[in-house]
Amino acid sequence: MLSRQDLTDIIRGLVPETEFPEGTQLLEAVVPAEKLFSLVEKLKSDPKTAFNYLISLTAVDFLTHITVVYHLDSTEFRHLVVLKSVIADRENPTIDSITELYSTAEYFEREVFDLFGIRFNNHPNMKRLFLEDDYGHPLRKDFRDEINIIER
Image: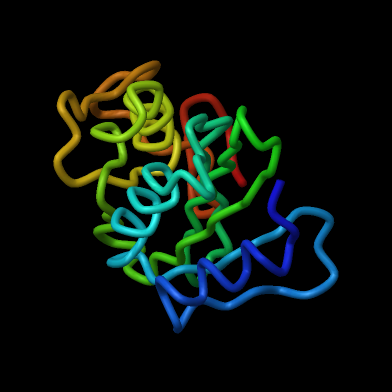
């Protein structure tokens, strides 16, 4: 099992501009959105890291930006990492899909698209999972539904 510092060094070596917030329970790495796919691909394929399991993929709306959050696990080495990418464009939020790397990402990404409106480039079936096409994105902080009196 690699230590937190070992993983930090590996990620920093792959994407030098990665930020590592201090005081977090799990190792967190904030990676530029345009470099996320290649980083995840390398972390999965490298035998030293072997991040072979995507635990979850979600997003958080901060009103000024949206952050996509990935929890990766190595079932072989039992180490975890939380990768985050900030999307500044709230009008047209996009990031590359990792479905090619983890088949379970297909439904995670569709759920995030449905609830937050983030489009995943190169996704094999980017359509809503739960809601109707003309409904808004209810986990966005600016979401309003005047008919059902829902405000965030």
